[in-house]
Length: 219
Image 1: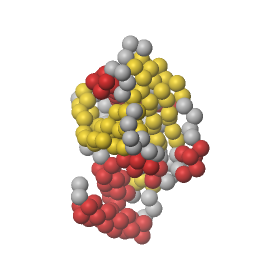
Image 2: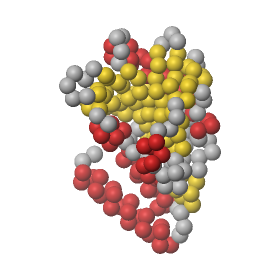
Image 3: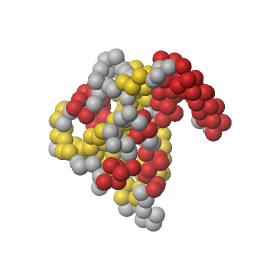
């Protein structure tokens, strides 16, 4: 999406938001179907181990932001790192990885949409894929990242769609639904890119049916 379309959508959402604020109160709705307790620690041969939330995250994100941070390992396959962010009253807790990775010293070498088969009515899950490398010289550390967003029985891999859907619910229904952000990453090791792709694709395909009810629709 170019900047003109983004600006138009932003103006429309802002105008709608102001109208709603003038004539009604926005109802804040948490997601009972999807929260930290509903993200499984073990499933499909994957075993999870929790990771503490960092001080930087606690400092810069709203206090009521909730997290799931776990390393998952499947002995016959490999290791992935899962981060899930759940918005609180301030729905701005979520941002795209494209924003934070460069500030942490990572280079984003490629960004594209990837389609993953899942045992779910949507059949194929769209995720945003990032191929990233750390450092500026030898890029010795490389990772593959998949991410997507979920909220109000919806799933999308595009940030602008999430913003649009949130704005639509606020403007039309006067409801502010909680959203969650899922990010999965795995290192490109000695097995190369193909091996890393197999690991992360298998994990997401196994995870998604565990967290998404049959009513979830893809946008």
